[in-house]
Length: 142
Image 1 (spheres, rainbow, N blue to C red):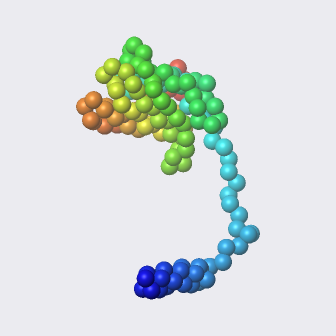
Image 2: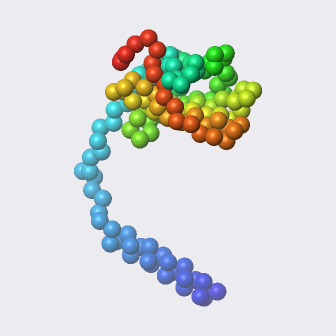
Image 3: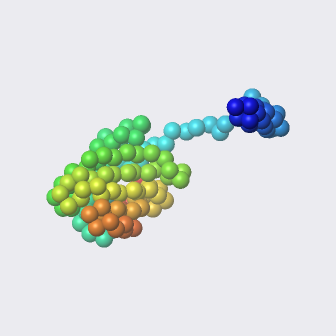
């Protein structure tokens, strides 16, 4: 029992010692101002470049919630979606739950300079991932 107590005591001393050698944290360290991303940039109808697949994003809220619809060309049930920031880009994640699409997902990133959603389609039933591009329908750049 004494050896266990000695090990814990040594570990505690080592932890305290490492904190005393760490550089001090100063209150004047400033964080860069945070700007809220404009998720509404991805609102609209998007056509996949390799087929008749249509993605419709509407009712986009600042917290990353949106109404997302998908057509191939008939409607496919969107079970879940979210909009966030990843890799400094707007990220749209979509998960399907429909016959033939069970568990399939899109992970798309918005590239403002091209007004495009670019990313990956994971086709769960076949366990395959494809690179995909969606271009906005009806306009060049926003």
